[in-house]
Length: 275
Image (cartoon, rainbow, N blue to C red):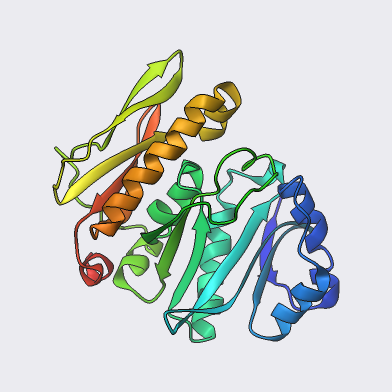
């Protein structure tokens, strides 16, 4: 199997996207081709992954503004199920970075569910993105298999693609802060093999804090919807509170049952330029 990546520039290329979208996000209508073609003509970046001549994944993004500042909005990335967990997403994002720099962008943004820790490791621990914004129920009610039944809370990832932080991640030598002794802001217990949140710790003001989430949130959701709801509600409260206090999400740490997000009380410039 040889996977190749390239920009999607023709109508024939873009006509393949709806089928991939419908497979990746079962239950959600794909984006209309007319809209995709319009984005492509006016600054959108469309990338595809191919197994020989068959498209097996894609990524697309478009220019946007936040508070008057331009950046590239990365809206969708997905792969067919049999091609997931092979590191293809990382390769696709580095290609996106190169395309964005070629078009004179300095930042790319996108959203993801903070309870989906696999996405967290990609976006923060592998690519060097940071999070300073929490968006409660960002997309309203969604009926696909990943989102059905819960508020669609999201992190807004900021990827400062010309920063020393991102350069060091691409080189494979990322800076990680010392988390020894950092307090956790959520208590949890195991019920069988499922982690259940039991309470919020709201008095800690250390420079480095930890917030746990389930290592396999969809497994929790399928086995105990009440536990999944509790995770959503408690993490929403604690993330929003700490981000409002100036904490930045900068890393994730693996554990057997949970994953800990690392939050630092540091100026953004310090986080971006240290090595």
